[in-house]
Amino acid sequence: MQSGDHVVIEWTAAGTHTGPLAVSNGQTIAATGRRALENGVLIAQVRNERIVRETTYWNLFSVLEQLGALSDAQSGFAAAT
Image (cartoon, rainbow, N blue to C red; front, side):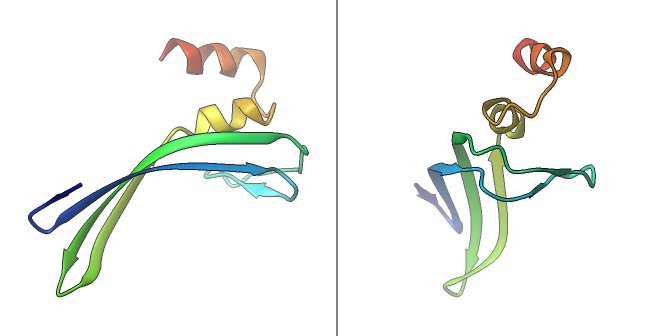
């Protein structure tokens, strides 16, 4: 979808967790061998046929839950929000 100088793209990504995954708190999650599927949205601002700003929204809790990387307490918190 496009409006003015902004483009919105809805995406789906799928994969198998085969290597270390660095998360924003500085920790690394060792490979689990599990598969994960996630949807997200990318919003880009374009000027002169070049992307000048990009923001992506996706649910990290969903991916971590699929990988089995959340404790029961964290998983409950993610479901409640």
